[in-house]
Amino acid sequence: MTNTGSDESGWQCVLQVAAHLALPVLALVMLQAGSLTRYVRASMLDVVKMDFIRTARAKGLQERTVILKHALRNALLPIITLLGFELPGLFSGAIITEKVFNWPGAGHIHIDSLAARDYPVLMGFTLFLAVLTIVGNLLADVLYAWADPRIRVRS
Figure (cartoon, rainbow, N blue to C red):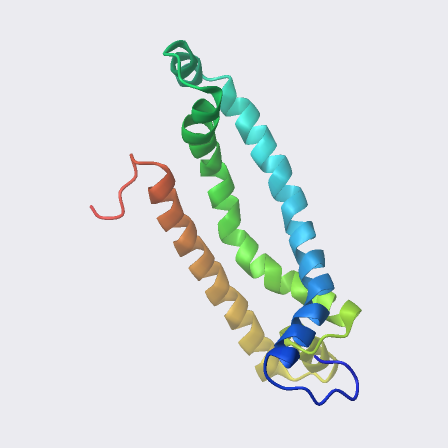
């Protein structure tokens, strides 16, 4: 989306599109970031009370090292599970966001096909969300193996 009557091309067009994307992206990110922040906080509070954190502090490690290397890595495990479902959630939230900001996209097409009872488009979008759910869970499994060395990708 560009300014009305704009005939710019190249980087100027890219900058215009980026300027128009700022508010919709901010709306989607803030929605997801709010819930994830609560989960990270709760998970960190649970992990910080565990024995291995007390042991790391007793060994004389710096507080930054204890928090970033030991606590955060273990607190991320439940968060990674949630991240697998955030990917399709972004597209589901984009349906409403695109309608609010009048941005042409997949959400607009979904709403229009819903009003027109265009079932093949609706089934295609539902299939797309199902594939995103599978891809999100696959990425979550890979990130899980990265965050927890006890979990291996290969058997």
